Figure (tube, rainbow, N blue to C red):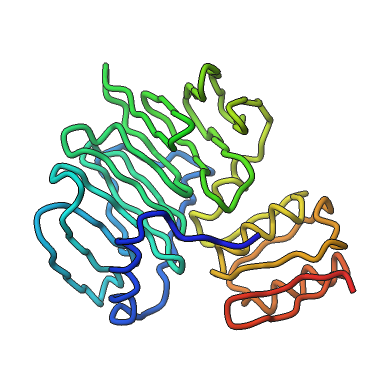
Length: 287
């Protein structure tokens, strides 16, 4: 259960060389709109968060310390292609040219052609609030899965962190395609995609999208899923010993608790113990 960076190594090299100059607390976004309507598209205000936007033309770095984010422009494969990449220690949110709002989890990337910002490629995890445009569907591609929508709110998880890809629908309707298989989702449903097959599940979409806000809500969630979420939340790698009961289900919330405080909560509930291996690596055992 180790985290891995996005495959765009050149972007990560740029990030590593500049991240120290952009120190500051990680921005804490607020997505209370999962529980109520998010408002009218086009009136959303961009919220500052540490993020990296990689675009074409030339290499230029602009640091805006007050907003705790910076922009990097670089020569891309195509001068008409734009990429947004978040570091392993930060999330990002931004508004696309069509007015759609996108949140990226840590170590994720989103790219699109300037000529068609409603056809995007995602690596990692993202939450989308898509503005409806008559006759202009919005498509999210992960390489193995295509999600097609007209106007809706949904979460897509596609990363080497996870054994399968998932699409969780908050509102609206989406069409999912993987290979020759397709499926239509309704609100409150999740599609699990693995080896080209698509499985429909009833889901707690609030939990699936809780990473975008100021708290993590675990309600009868398997320990295996909790540990993956905590890796993203605290930017750590968690190694699991064979005896740990990953199928155990837990219920608790994480707001401003430190990693050590959250570990103590899990220890009290499960009897498992956490052992620090180094600054960013932890082992969980039952002994």
